[in-house]
Length: 45
Image 1: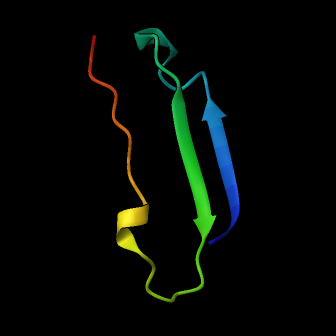
Image 2 (image 1 turned 180 degrees about the vertical axis):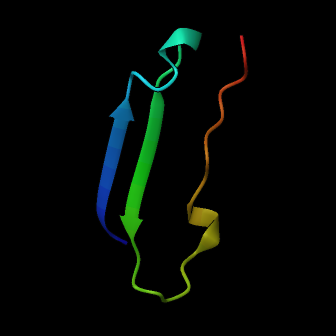
């Protein structure tokens, strides 16, 4: 994977006290190790 770009948008869900994070990544099309990528989810308070 190359050229990772993290976009932080504090305005999209500001009314709920949340911040939106978006990660863009460019891949080369070769199958990667799918176990190497995880999505983190926070539990609602």
